Length: 484
Ligand code: ATP
Ligand code: MG
Ligand code: MG
Ligand code: MG
Image: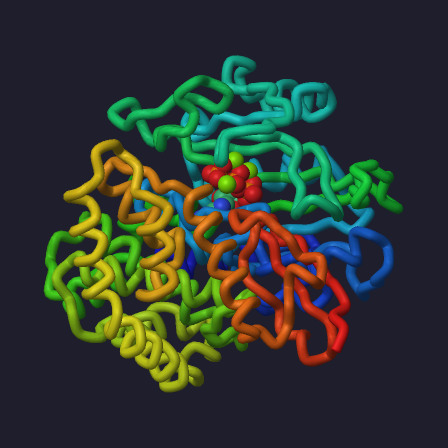
């Protein structure tokens, strides 16, 4: 099955179960200033879960475009390192707003995955998890569905690892949340990794394909959980991950859609090894960058625009790594419009504009990239340990336009780390100098924004209204009024 067919089948299946098909919303959450980007299908329904918004339906299904490159769910660092993470992906979802709850959600998910009429996946390849104390979900899986108990795993809250299992799902630090049950597909013993909850769970053998969240609470900024007006359901299945399963390949990058992008990236960079990591990163990044531009983000030095700029620069650097010194990234928009234009006509309509925006960024960064890389190479011959000094990271940022995460990406490839505190200290110094020279119109520190740089993503654009907004790494915003 092609990914486009899987998307259609999913929506049809849930339509046949009384769900209204709702189009994907924008990557820029319209109703939520606490969120950097739409990171799940439920985002456009947040207020429906909270009870503040009423819709003419109480069951919905969608294929939602998502970006996870900042905020609570951030997979930028995983791209190129795992078989399953993208910055941009599509999330298939079904939603119940105070209608059905645990039993129907589980029964529907199982039917769609395993029924001969639908995906027909062999049940013995599937392992499920439930929230540690959720006996109700456990019993539905064990007694009603008949999953063998050795393949039902109880998992609690995970307070640490970036992508270790966690069976209490939350959109962000505040908002709707609840216990969940997840479905994993076993890609086979020849791939490294263990079942969820095991020490090897972050390997790519058991890949999480579908999360069914039992939305029950609203978490307020004080951390308190308030019951929602009605127990609800929010699910999310990554289209690329389920496509890999259906196309009998392991990595998302091997699916139909990505093969087309990889071929285009190979041509544009003159590299033909389709498993090359840099090529995969480029194929991933063209999707997030193009869709962000389509949804109205432009590269800048602040907020969402800075996240976009960081992703574009990463892609350019990976092209450079493959020996491509001329602008190439914008050439991939055409291939993307070819594979995703049917589902997203706005890509076709916006193609020329996206190309222009990306090309302009490429031309700008090309000017300093080469020099920055040689400054870095030069610095590396002089260091003794395994850490790139903060001053070097700062110079790369300040003079050559290398976002810190880009330098970190290079460091990681070389088995090195970066001195973040040293970089922050250098940043502080520069701010002080700039203030002394009176070159800042707005004194951010005087505005009370003495924020750790590692948390800081960029400034919002409201300084002109006498207000300054700092966007933090976790998606939060800090707002201060500025005098004068
Ligand atoms: P993982 O543990 O693999 O990082 P997750 O638990 O963070 O995934 P959820 O927040 O539960 O993911 O999102 C629901 C579904 O969306 C996942 O089961 C997966 O199929 C898909 N998904 C999540 N993150 C990504 C991503 N970065 N790229 C592609 N698909 C994703
Ligand atoms: Mg994750
Ligand atoms: Mg997970
Ligand atoms: Mg999950």
